[in-house]
Image (cartoon, rainbow, N blue to C red; front, side):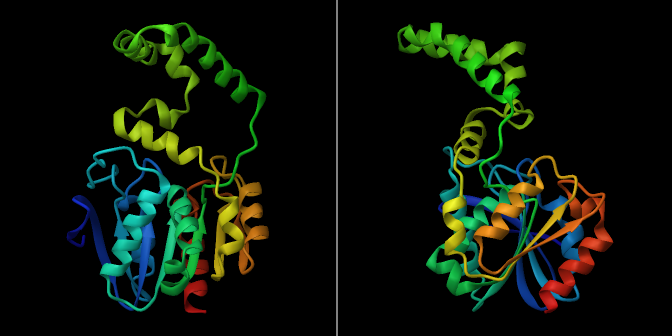
Length: 263
């Protein structure tokens, strides 16, 4: 296994691994994941690209940010990392939450100037279709919180902290949200409540959307929305694969990725 390196952005340490040879490829993982999950992808492309596989702040070996970050904060950090490579242009491969960051970055002038090919797999950022169950949970949570909001400051915070610790409250949140606390919980809320459809027309890159047919976290309709909104995007669907298509069908994923980056 290759050794870990540390990039520091505004006193925030970002751990990464470097593997392979050739043009630089920046690889970003999804929410709750880390660079170890993405390393098999980098290994499969090592003959073609020098991959930089990052642990985003708050994940893997990278410490949590000192305050809650939004997507723009993560985007600023990745932009600074790419600048630090001192390469004219790079390619990128991103999964899930990493897709949010890359949609933002590609729509910026910096991204247009320094990023070539973009592979997004199971990318997040599109507004999801919500079920009746979702809205039932949402409004149940509002009803539960309402009585505590009239309490004075310190008492209100203690009461809300107690409410959030109950099984009932935890059952109303997503599985990702319920596992979090403090800074990363706030970061999660800031991230998932920002929808990025507005970035799509501003992305000129050649974009491959490589999706698992059975992806439930970011369903295919979201990939189709990205394909429609990005002028030079193409959607390829891998059968019998889910949100982690690169783990479910590693050989097929690697062949398609290799053809894309070679071309």
